[in-house]
Amino acid sequence: MTKTLQVNHLRKAFGGVMAVDDISFEVAEGEMLALIGPNGAGKSTCFNMVGGQFPPSGGNILLKGEQGEAVSIAGIGARRIWRLGVGRTFQITATFTSMTVRQNVQMALLARRNMIWKFWARANDLLKDEAQTLLETVGLRDQAERAAGILAYGDLKRLELAIALAGQPKLLLMDEPTAGMASGERTALMALVRGLVSRTGISVLFTEHDMDVVFDVSDRILVLDRGRLIAAGTGGGDQGE
Ligand code: ADP
Ligand code: MG
Image 1: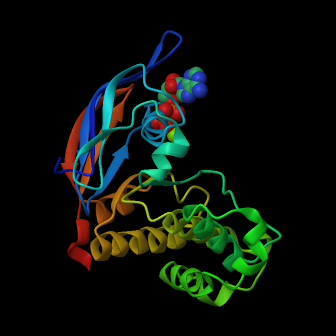
Image 2 (image 1 turned 90 degrees about the vertical axis):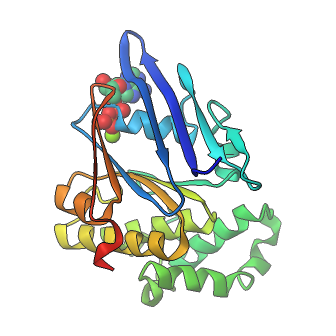
């Protein structure tokens, strides 16, 4: 398998509604692919099937495995999919507000290593450098020792990205990662993700309302409407780097 993700004839029915109706696409290594379309088009449903929140009604989803083999991930559940290297950010930010920014990232690093809770006391020193590096990557170095609960909204979104990256995903799913952010912050966050994709070769599947941002950062754009793919195009990709 050459691509990071391959989706074939994917479908999802909710009662009589075909939320996703026979969709096929691929995401290459180091590619930033935008899925756009009006509200109700089926974007989140697609993300939720790839991330394992919902099982598909039909079709298959293949993820490139460690040896380049195709691993079928359709319907195997979010936890297993995460273990296979699919990370995601959520529209509602999921952080522990009483812990510091750095501790939130350390916790995500621990989870990746399958360490258990009773080690938490020692873990506060373990992985500190690694957490700090991730915080630098997302531009939160100076906020590391603050409580996550007092971060500004845009910074919380950056923290959420650091937490997703702590899982070392090969594919990152971002469903409206900039929802609720001011325009300048939105551009900055997505430019940061673009830089990460170009530098590390991680693959990103995302959706975003601001078309200027979409065209600036994405390599390719797919347009979804009423559950079907109706158009495809190219974005500016990393030309701006
Ligand atoms: P988008 O993210 O593009 O706005 P969604 O994937 O959220 O679109 O929704 C696609 C369609 O599926 C809509 O008609 C929506 O009402 C329906 N839908 C989404 N999630 C559910 C659900 N959990 N149960 C029933 N219908 C749903
Ligand atoms: Mg949605």
